[in-house]
Length: 145
Image (tube, rainbow, N blue to C red; front, side, top):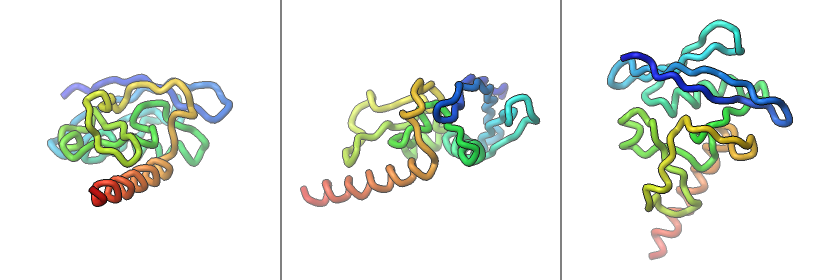
């Protein structure tokens, strides 16, 4: 399969946006690859994972310690794929409302679609924490019914 080319921005708080080119390739049924020149202009680095959302998270773990945030939907704290989406490569994810089920297709977002404001995204750790709190609240709400 030819790689899907995605242009998106990374940014440090208060800094200028920096455009990066991602090459996304399905290597096998269960292996996806994100390739990017990082730092910009540097050698190409690859991140392999079972789906593209996890490839993105692997790349984020590299840039976040340097203060960068990736400005895309998959980096929002409330966004993660369902199991079905993950099995299909996680090109789309759910943008969850806290403690509520994903009830509408309006909550589906393209993982690599841009986010303009750095305040709309978080770190991998912030995303993990938000999603964990969301599911705990969801369990509380559904068990109370």
